[in-house]
Amino acid sequence: MKSIKIDNREIGPDHAPYIIAEMSANHNGSIQNAFKIMEMAKESGADAIKLQTYKPDTITMKSDNPEFMIKGGLWDGKTLYELYEEAHMPWDWHKPLFKKAKELGITIFSSPFDFTAVDLLESLDAPAYKIASFEAIDLPLIEYVAKTGKPMIISTGMANEEEICEAIDTARSSGCKELVVLHCVSGYPAPSEDYNLATIPDMASRFDVLTGLSDHTIDNTTAITSVALGACLIEKHVTLDRNGGGPDDSFSLEKDELTQLCRDSKIAWKALGKVNYKCKESEKSNIMFRRSLYVVKDIAEGEEFTHDNVKSIRPGYGVSPKYLKDLIGKKSDFNLYKGMPVSDKVLK
Image 1: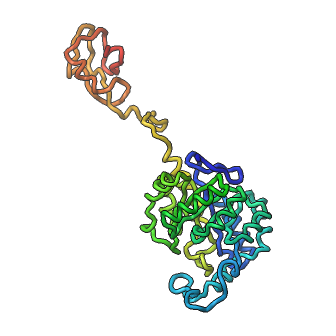
Image 2 (image 1 turned 45 degrees about the vertical axis):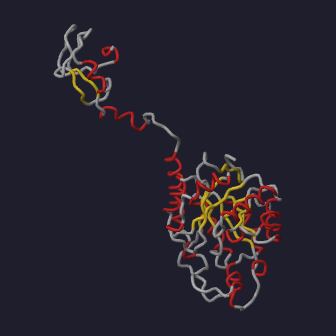
Image 3 (image 1 turned 90 degrees about the vertical axis):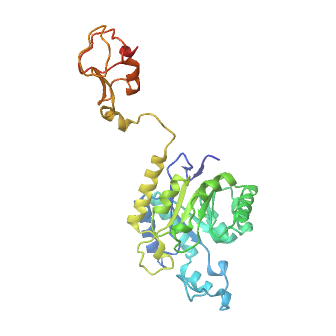
């Protein structure tokens, strides 16, 4: 698989990195905030905006039992139900958000967390699906999404090699023809040293998939570096205000940072290029700064070439200095004048 296509945008190594702006819970309970995030993503140059489609009752259950309590980190002291009740996006927002995306000219899709979420997104003709890291082990969900026939993106945070293999096999055997697998660290935020980006090319060869990065670090260095290792898709959480107080705001990119990511990841991809040892266009005007063989004293026809009348100097319009030893002691077939480059004709 050399590339996939989402909403007519080619994604793969031969195309600029596909940038997904993950809204997540950063709407902070306001559809107007959601609209503004979409506008910001479009203005910043992102290719797509991504939602998360769940209800607290479809992702967990209401319980105060210890195993349902979050201890430490960003969401310390909340129950799972409280977190997802605060963070979820109301389902009746989806239709106006999809409409807004069409008006803006930006692709929109979502991460479904159960079958009913897939059904909702199908009713809106979502062009692709993202399987979140924690759902990578939910093989029935992956199978259900794969049967839509839409492109699928799977994040691998916390999944081991066997679980990644099972997720990919399930997607493929259930009808998924277009797949990207994202290397991910499910820390919020995640330290860059945990990312082990060397995993990206290994994942590509080990599982024969297109690869990308779901990046939870707090800057763009890791994401941009991933491009050089084959990431063709980058996903980052985005927000209007990192200090907005929402569940995911603190590890999300603001507008200037998202703009930088969209710009610099494309620069990195262009810089990667192809294997090329030829003189580049930007170098051609600097040939005068290379050394070559020049006549530095007049030489009459029949006169010997010596170290006094031929030297290796700048500019570089003569033959290579490596031919100096072939000339010394031989006689010139021409009258040559000071300041002339030694040409191939003279050399022969």
